[in-house]
Image (tube, rainbow, N blue to C red; front, side, top):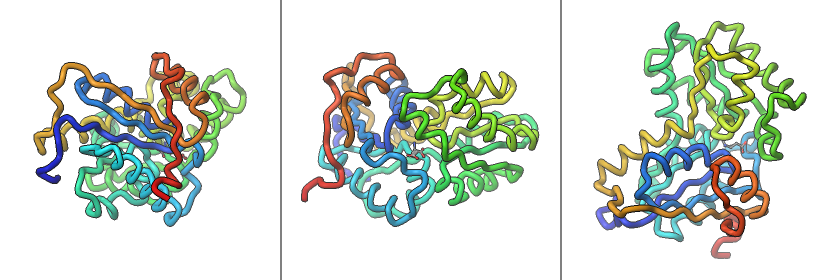
Length: 276
Ligand code: DGL
């Protein structure tokens, strides 16, 4: 990282929508002295069915938007961008770009008792094989990877209860191969999925250990900041929320998830047209 970066600069966090809030919530708890700029690309959600070229363009737009706020590091709180492109683009930037794969795989490896691990992710994430490769490198090659394309649209439309027949049907469908394989641990490899944690537990039971890829990413981000001596020493940080779609929808759903009132606090900015 550049020696010119400033400890007092904010940390950028982005996702296609609400999912990255699972990482942000953990960051606000674990690193409360930091300032954060959260960007949710809600006008272009979902990312999970897009091709690599489109995802590369979206990632470049989102990173440029966050860098326009002079962030000192960026948490790519999106399993899809982390899986499909992060390794290939990290070197292009003078600041740390941290993804969600490494820490989630490490947490799953530490949690499993029988060595069998399930992976849920978007179609693009599962297609990339990134989680399975990382687990294999840690000595855990016995994995079952399931693309879950129905989940992000359900979550973004506010449907997260196991009482909702469409939610239950989707969860049963995606859990079936995981439970059949005997996996005792399931990586929620898309940062949106922990918003369904309660519903997943209601369908899968309490035995299956769920790994929250958003929350776990704090470990990697903290390590990167520590190493570069970039942890903020101020008393209490702030968060700015920016979305490309409706600020009102995000304030309502995101506020409910974070347990804080975001009404009137969400700004609207279009990453695609930034600087054009
Ligand atoms: N939350 C993101 C992920 O982790 C994006 C999901 C989507 O937009 O499809 O994959």
